[in-house]
Length: 406
Image (tube, rainbow, N blue to C red; front, side, top):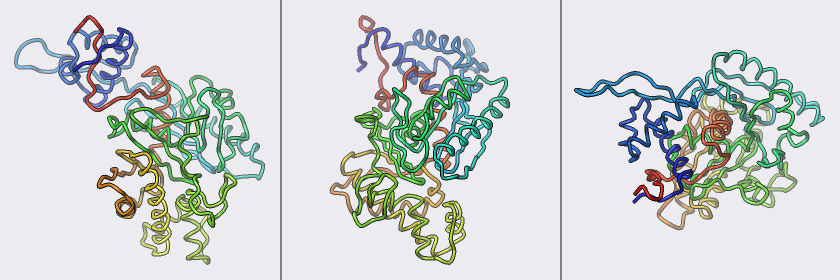
């Protein structure tokens, strides 16, 4: 049964459905779009023509039929690109990303700390600006839509200010204003876990899932929450800071000022601590070094990763009990060892579950690339769908009908 909506609302709903269908099925003909979406052929034709006029869709090759008029296939216009910046403590990954999620080029910058957080943050901005300008110069001939920034912290979506960033210096400056000053144009900024939700909604496998959780595992731990098809931001935009829920009062001090938070047991920093406890004679300076050792079969590195994973799973079991997600997506470097991590996580979820149902747990495709794609998707979602947050989008959602057209 089709829903009834005002003409403006119906157009927006149907536009969204057609965009998602083109993205999923391209190249695709208008006739196939009508068949796949359940929309009238005339409605499809009008919306596709508008999307072509707006530059989001391109007419392509002619199809072949046994008889009759040859259909014209349409595709998304992959000349549209965004600059995605994944900004983390100590480093940043940035890349040009096209409308289909392809990374056209990529660069990683590392930052050294001077002890003065504000000075460090400003130096970081200058380094990023230089790299970003170089990338933009290299994409001449493309349609540049803006800059998306994924940060390790919570962002007020109205003021663009960093609300909470215990593991990084971004709260020491007006980060959004500084990016606007050195880069200009459209800039969108959000928490890394939320950005990963935006990436999943457009680029990912689970775009039709209404109850979805992303867990960003890096120097800290954060979650993005899609509940009944809506991004959950909570009071003050602080929803999802489960990395700072009390986990063990006898645990290590946390950057937030408390002790024993979940992230002090289940983050990259925690894994490094576990390794140093097992191998004090072999200090490591980065989580990547630990991953390299684990990948090579170092037993102490593997035990450190296993311990981190076990604590990650215990925390996930609490979140599953309270939020009942259908899918959990783990985002981070640690997913390089996913075949080892997944059985540990699933066994914990099964043993702690009070029902027979547990969510599907998957690793984000390409690990940390999800955060770069997420940063780009912040811009794409605002420009393409003309809004900053999600509307419910169930799998197989029926097209909207204007009252009087039934």
